[in-house]
Amino acid sequence: MRNAADLRYGQSVAVVATGGVGSNIIQIAKAFGASDIITIDVADDKLEAARSLGATGTVNSKNEDVREAVAALTDGKGVDIAFEALGRPETWPSALDALKDGGRMVPIGLGAGVQTAAVEINRTVRRSQSIIGSYGARTRHNLPAAWPKALSAAARSSTCRCSRRKHKRGAPDFSGAPRVCLES
Image 1 (cartoon, rainbow, N blue to C red):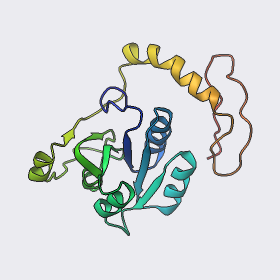
Image 2: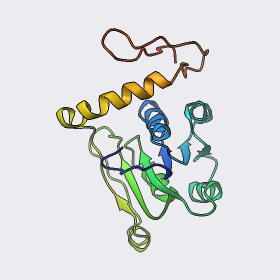
Image 3: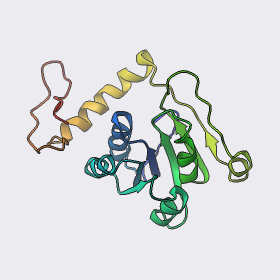
Image 4: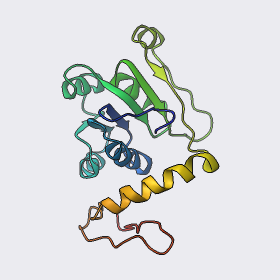
C-alpha cells in the first residue's frame, strides 16, 4: 500500500471487495491515516463488518450506482485511491468509478486463470487516472522495514475485531508477532 498506492495521511480510499484481503486493506488504510475509507461490496454482512474495521462509508454495488454513491460520500469528488481486492472483471469498473480526477486505481486481487477487464479508456485518460498493479511485497526488501511498524500498530490495538465478541488481546507472544483472533 505504501509503494504502489503511495497512500498518504489524509487521503481518501475505496476498497472494492471486503473479504480477507479487503479487510486487511481497510485496517492498513486506517493505520496510515486515511481520511475516508469507503468499502464497496455486494454483501451487506461484509459491509457491516467493514465498518467495525474502520470503514467510514459503505456501498452495496448490487443495489447502488457506485459512482453516484461514492460521490455522495465524498462531496462529489471521488477517492484518491481505489483498491480492487478480488481480481475479477466485474469489480474493476467499481474501483474506477470510485476515483476522483487524478486518482489511482490499485488492483491487488488475482482471479483464477486469465482475467480480462474492460476499461473505459477515454474517461480514464481525460480524468488523468492511473492504474498501478501491486503484487504483494518484496519480502527481503519490504518486510524488515515494515515489521516494527506493524508490531507497533498491532500493540496499540487492544481489542479483537472479530464479530462474535470483543475480548482483550494479550501482549505480543514470544516471537514478537501479535496474537490473532481466529474466531471471525
